[in-house]
Length: 270
Image (cartoon, rainbow, N blue to C red; front, top):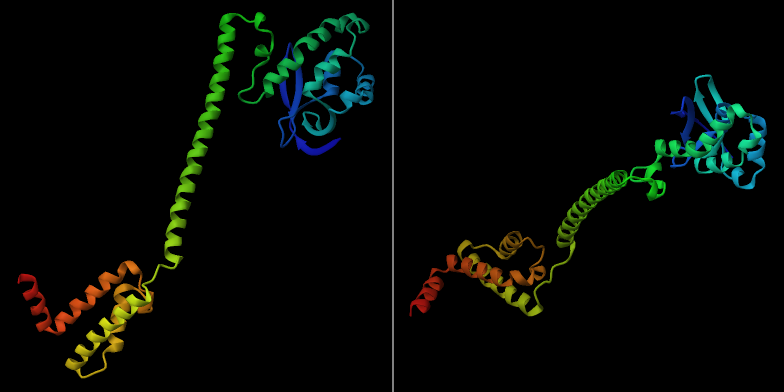
């Protein structure tokens, strides 16, 4: 498996040695160059690479990465971090030189944990917390628990903030959609009977106005009605506007026929 993207590994200090590790782009998977581990341990690199490549489980976690190192660019065969302890466990400490035996055991015990702590995602437990609770003091257990709770709280606050933003956006969209529907949806128009009554009232106003001006006032009355109620036809007048339109026409008629207005006043006071 190959990945030719140029990556810059992270260096982690480990008992005087330098461990190299790199996170695969687009994922949280961490890989460790095998050659550097072999060099640190003083074991034969070629034989270890062959062992890893021939092992069915370890081979599944191999990845060739192009790394930017102090010596320049180089393609490095890397092993996925979670498989590093398994690989190290395959090396028999009794079969290596006495000079590197203690270091090998140290790597087998702590190397993966140190690398995990360097790359672990926020909210995940540290290597200390992954050990058995019996190995932790009460204070250490409380600390690890507090850190985990704090990480979860941060994630929860971030999620709540995102949800609030989403809810606000959806509310704004809903208001805009409702307004658009009100503008586009056809309003319930007056009935045929109401339309006939409205037309008769328009006719009365137009005739009375025409008697004063000597002109045909039908077009003018209809046009004024359309502008007043924002319609294109008297038949499309919204039903809730019918009473106001009739009253508007009656008031207009009263300005033309004062006698009709006086008759209304007399019937009201009488």
